[in-house]
Length: 130
Image 1 (cartoon, rainbow, N blue to C red):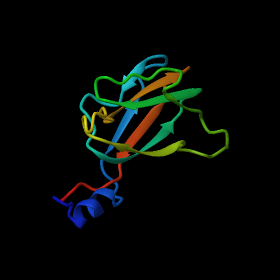
Image 2: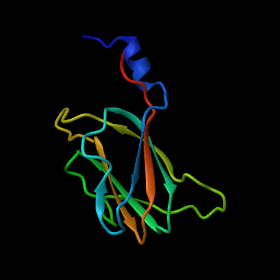
Image 3: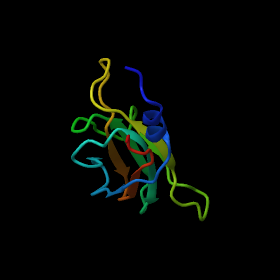
Image 4: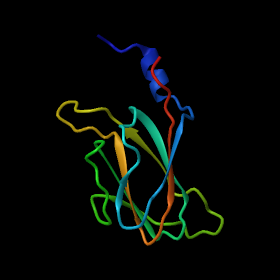
């Protein structure tokens, strides 16, 4: 069955949805964004407070099975060096549901802060299907 045009239009159109905020409990430990999987769609990730954190490592994977570490394959973000430059980095990413075509889910983020505690926000920016 072919997809209806409205399915694609509403799924990929931008819309500010609910925001999840996470303040990492401590430096040097992997912490998942939440306990349940994120809904499929497009999301925006931003660091809203660096709090003395020298690096933030982020990894995307399946809920309950993703761990970030201060090394690849996690992705490293450094605090901005420009004075007055806030909410950096600003990154968009896609969340895909469980196994499709043998590929694992990508419905969770894990974080690893280095040196200090930082705060991140994740906001869904794609509309839900109607």
